[in-house]
Length: 417
Image 1 (cartoon, rainbow, N blue to C red):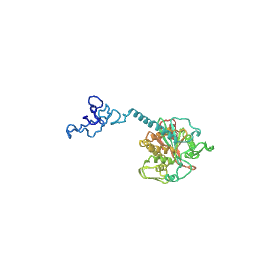
Image 2: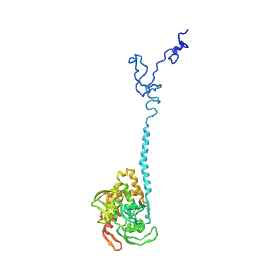
Image 3: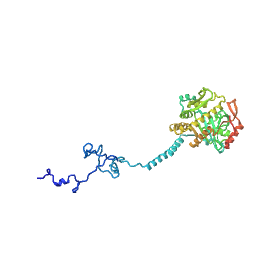
Image 4: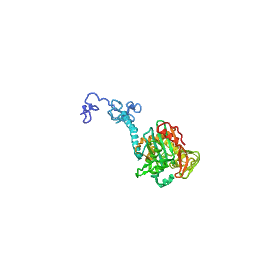
């Protein structure tokens, strides 16, 4: 009878605990630790609690098989566990390339798209090719900048707010010649009551021949619009007008509002019911409606229209400075609404590009910043004409010398009123 339990044999006993039929015992197996490189804790033996043989377990450890050679503790090396499982090292070269592409889009694509967007908003409505008997090309560039009293697009409520009234048609409220040249930029304001000769002209709309006549210069615009106004300015000054730009009441007020207002300072309180001007002494921020009242006011000024043109130049200087501030240029939430408000209401000649508009703007900013000259047209004095009423008569010798210097792109030495 066998001494072994039922079904057991000596051969079975010899195989117990072996991985093969070899005569030697199966070697001890070490189970790797899942833990990412933390050394296995020493087994707690029975010499502590249970004697010298230990309890066969490590404290708080999990075991698995298959640790790779790079991590003797089973934390990695085989791509199947441990820290960084499934995460290859970052490809910095690829990231740098993507960053460069994004930067290129921002630096090139966005400005180009903005340029074409802004250029498309210009209202190219004035055809200077219809102007007759024009002076030849001259050195430098001459812009005729006009502020009209157009109420186009203004609701009855907005007209009341801006104190514009509801008069039909359009008239020139301000006129300036801006000369951009190699010997400095010059801005000359033309009084709206300047007594001039309006030359004969064939109407662009009716085709009727308009006879030569003596009138205030703003009558030229009322009779036949921008083309006859340009014809009249060229006829009386001898300057070749390269580009024409016009903005109405509403557009001007909107630009000021989008910029957040402009600060103006007053030596004394100003009140004028005709323009709506009502300003206290001292410095204060003007919104769009108040700024428009400031540039339209002339009845409360001792110099009348001549003092008003000086105020117009002051406010244009403030607008140019505010528009060019980094806080405006680098803020798309301020820049784009301001550009939109200005370009939507800016009427220009058919050959004027956005680049020309920028040239005009920077020349204005340069003049207002002291890099150039601001002046009124030299006049002898104001007076009353039996037929025309209040008029301004130019100082012809000084004025003609001024226009000759501009025509030849020379440094301006003439002083204005």
